[in-house]
Length: 270
Length: 336
Image (cartoon, rainbow over all chains, first blue to last red; front, side):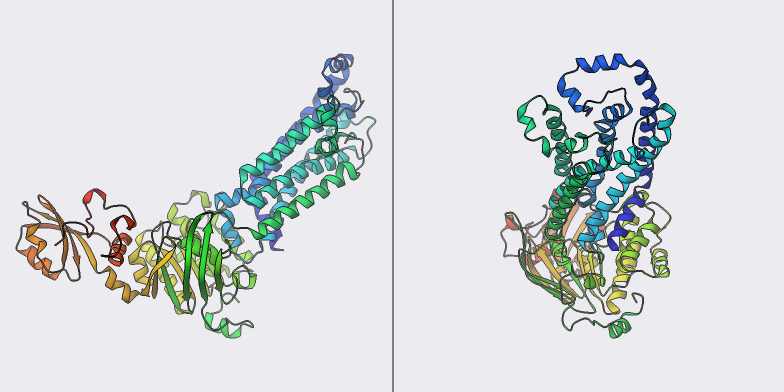
């Protein structure tokens, strides 16, 4: 109960920022959908262009054999393998690093903890607030996309719940990075380390996934890359399963639990 | 029932304060790596008592408070508030805390911040909050980030006092406040004390501690060097530093022999004197001289340390900066 109060306070404090993030992501979705007809109509030009690209780059687009001019190929290559989830990562990592470490170093955490609330409740309440913020931006973005897609034919041949699938998989992907960032911050009180490790995971995971098809060294680690969890099966046409949703969510829960456990026991930075 | 008067509250509470000290620090040691910030500290604050924790910056006051509140784990020794650890939520409910450097979310309005803290405390009568804000002249409609340092401090004061806590832990509570508000806050401290609360109050200002504390402990480099009642402390502080200006040059020797004068530093028409005890003999002596202006320094913690260590500590051991530009001579000045 106290945890929810603390989490709700975070959303209230940051409501303006959240509003702008939501508007920005919704605009990104509209823009991406609006460009689709010109990509589809140019047809072969894009296919030829893709054929010339190095294999690692094509791999990084997560097309998995789909045509870039098809709705699922276009969506995964333009949104889910890069831009969209990176935008969510920027939002999520910033908030997650602040949740404990950032507010600890700016000095605002101390007074919250002077109240009769458990540290664990504060930590979980805040991580829930971060999750809720990402989910809000993510859901609004996909509702806007789903509403706009039919008018440009971006829903052709997709499952009915395509955008819900994609929203869930995106959330699960971002959650892993957010959880790591939060956990490092909660365990150490160091915001720099938190962001560094969270962003580092995103970068290394991206490279491993992209290079896996090219170099065998990376192939071995591919299963550990959250990008692979997200992109092995095209998120737009894949219903939530253990690999693209439940595995990342379970890893996130473990990371949050470990960080919170450590936070409960350590000294607060002054 | 956070708003019931304290004696009734204590009587009605199913879990009355255990007999004995309300705040207890026993053999506390806190190390950060190789630095020992607090070393073997003992202190006790009883109900209805204000304990002033005095010391220069870096003496270990804040570290002691942070250990007491459970933000830091003691390297050795124990701290208890109301008979238990401060991390116990039932105990924390009865503590009011004002951090030395208050930071709050800048975009939130004061009223919303106070409501949030009131909620976390399980509800506080809104009238009590309004009354405190009015008393301290704090405008609740403004965002915290736009407040002056003094007004920010008031927000901290209100949240520390609003639930009428049985234990108050105040880290430099009057920093940034103007003298009038300082007085208001010290009045609030007395009010809680009279209602039976135990107050631990840190400060580096002697006059403030003298004014409100019943007992004083002086920390230096993590050690408690003195603990006494305020009455006892006044003996130590009965040393004054005066700046005299004459209409014509006066030699140091003119004042050096005056009873009570410990040191004299003369530079043409300006003379700095340190007096122990009554200034009456000096005033009589000055009446015979072409005196034009007299100014007195507030008693600083450094002076107090000089008093404590007088004749004991080597000069290099002494805390605090040297008297700036020789304006405020220490006891090392021209000895009388």
